[in-house]
Image (tube, rainbow, N blue to C red; front, side):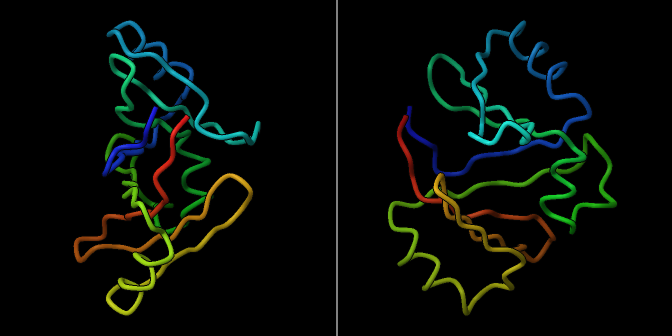
Length: 127
């Protein structure tokens, strides 16, 4: 599986209930992180990545800018790029960086657009 160009990540009240709902609609789910404490799932449609669901409380901890957002009305988007370093170097002067993260699984670069939507830049991956 390959990540898509823009990946929605929805904050949900109950990750297991959301996954069960989408599985009934024909989606399949996979863990969204190697971290067992990270309550996030990737949902696929016909073996292609569709979007992620992330426990709302975990998402609010991850991105405190979302602390006052109502579940069902918040989330973030991931922009997957082929060259993380080149892209983030190019856009860094154009955006207000709100968070950067790096570990063995991924490097992430978050900013807000003019309307307050949070975009996380990640390097394209294949599983």
